[in-house]
Image 1: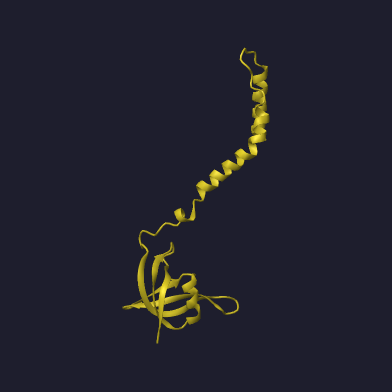
Image 2: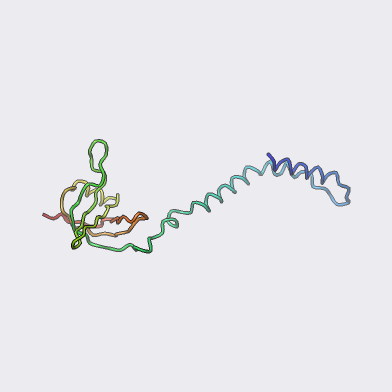
Length: 146
């Protein structure tokens, strides 16, 4: 440990120097006993500074603020597992000549919709946009259409 060597050398120099003032000699023993705590606290502060709390890190996309919307469209499979079970759905909504899709958030209401893949629905919820530009809806209420 380089730091320890420098401190030992400094302690030796301090104990040899001629002076009327008392010399500092137990410095290395004190630091050796405190070194693990110092390193842990330094690492903790570094990690905390680099990886702030999730609430701080996940800021809203200023180009697309979250808002409450009602979306009507076809509920389609977005992902299936290796056994063919639907694990994610999205709503394909017609908006004039274009079609928008909204990924359904993986929460309690969103999981209820997994059974209705292939049906038409009207869903109301909070729509946000992720960093890739995907619109994600956290469904609060839904109605199946015929």
